[in-house]
Image: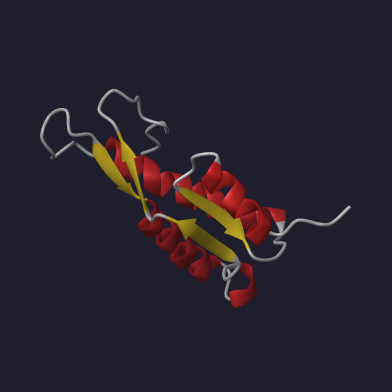
Length: 110
């Protein structure tokens, strides 16, 4: 059976309706992946829990690319070697729209 790479999987997620796919270009240590994931989702949680400034009913747009960037910058402080942080890549849209009727995806971790 052929081993699948991130480049094989991303189009399948897009075909299924995903607007963006976050992946790693090569295997990473579990602890590094956990650190990245924690920073990434904490960044999104802050953005979700900010007071809405747009018009009622217009929904909200999350900056997923900024959350990836912030997570990588935070990893850079903890992990000096570029190998541990350069693997993460965002495919597709850097933004995600949450409609007004959708509930927040992440709890407030402040």
